[in-house]
Image (cartoon, rainbow, N blue to C red; front, side, top):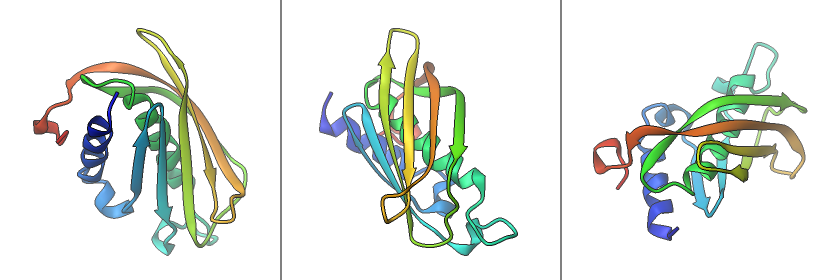
Length: 143
């Protein structure tokens, strides 16, 4: 794999319409990805902490792109993903670190751990991923 592939995946991710709202920062390397997200009040549930959907997005995205770092021809798909939210967060930054834990021809497993800015674990997740039929081309933002 090469750095050009990782940068193209980062560009693809940055161009996703949903990321205009979340404004995450993603860095990809071989079998790994790190996502940084600044906590904002519009991420909060009614009692003033980040909603679980934001935990899911950060964890799934980090694990997903760790897997896609290993695949240069097609986009991958999340087949299943399980999360644990272990600590609330209401300020600072959330950092999700994903890594591939198993890779075969058809199935990829990855996990991600979510930290607050003091490096305390606030969540974790793991999922299964598979290759899609969607080619990585400039038309989908892979450039």
